[in-house]
Length: 66
Image (cartoon, rainbow, N blue to C red; front, side):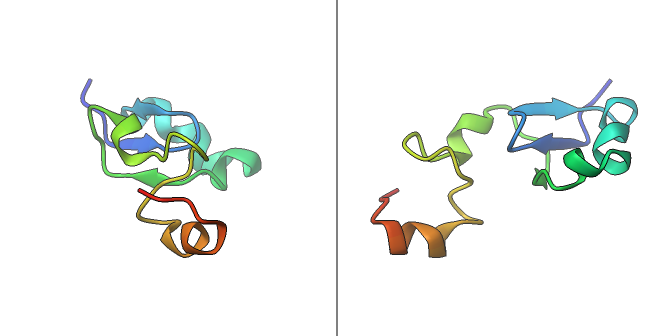
């Protein structure tokens, strides 16, 4: 099955069926889902493990460079 979303917390891509817990379980609902991608680590800062685009404002405050 083709992935429909990737989770930046789990660092995994999910098909529609396996994405369902992220839409139902309260703890998983807080995970950041993005369009599916092959290499999730390319979107992550290797120092802080945050999504670079979504957390740019945090990086500027903490000195993280990307």
